Image (cartoon, rainbow, N blue to C red; front, top):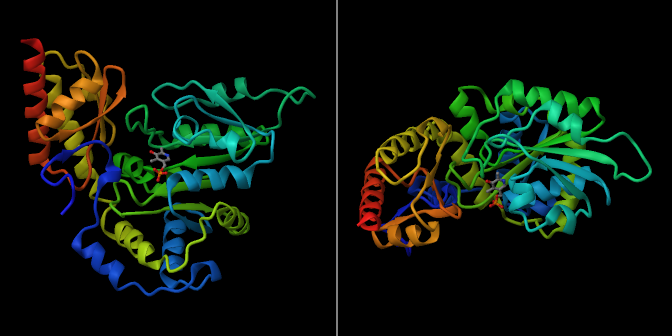
Length: 348
Ligand SMILES: *Cc1c(COP(=O)(O)O)cnc(C)c1O
């Protein structure tokens, strides 16, 4: 039994719990010491994951944050400049790691719904000069979390990657929810990672695994990344027990992301009809819905909780709803009822 059983939990797709079938795969996993390279299940997961995003090799890491930071550590030297969208996870939500761990300088680029263009990048990258840091790395995020699960299209990625390479920079793709983007567009994940120098994706979000992310890239680069992971304390031993969940997720839970997207669209459509809420159903691209609420988001969130629905604030008067495999259409219906009830009470 979970502590929050019976509640409709729309705080994040990280709250998903392993299904009985996934747990069985975990229990039956063949394992070994992965720091010695001897865990067959971790190896299988790394090979499978790398192939899905069109890269040679992969590294299993405990979290998306570690995957991103191992990438920054492996791509940069102290004092290098790292370009990232101004509200990107790697800049906004990773505890200042670009500076604190890699000693690199983040340079935020304001985007539009999480995306920026090759022209934006060209404007940000300066000519060499003794005063300037060395421009080195560009980070993209697909889907973009704070923008509300927005999707970069293949040609948008291509244009920024081409500009970055022309300017002598490398590109890391934070694809925590890359499979949501791929399913939303109906293209293989590999197409959205084409040309990038590294890509991270999470198994622990909409894919439903309890733990883990994969950092993917060229084989020699991944060997260097492996060393950085060890330095951070991320070398795991019989991690096959976790990797088995990731393999199960990649085999069974990718295509079903479409259901989460349909639920998010449905939620947005219903909430848009409630007077007092601000929702743009046309802005829902994947599994997130941003809802403008009357008054402080924290108070609204508390009132929803009293009605059995969990949603986190993502701004002073904005809540973020995230659909996932542990919330079905009936759960979404309960959420709409709770929103209706709270809004009515506030209006009274
Ligand atoms: C969740 C997330 C991460 C980090 O993953 P954790 O496993 O929570 O550390 C990185 N990037 C994006 C875009 C995310 O949404």
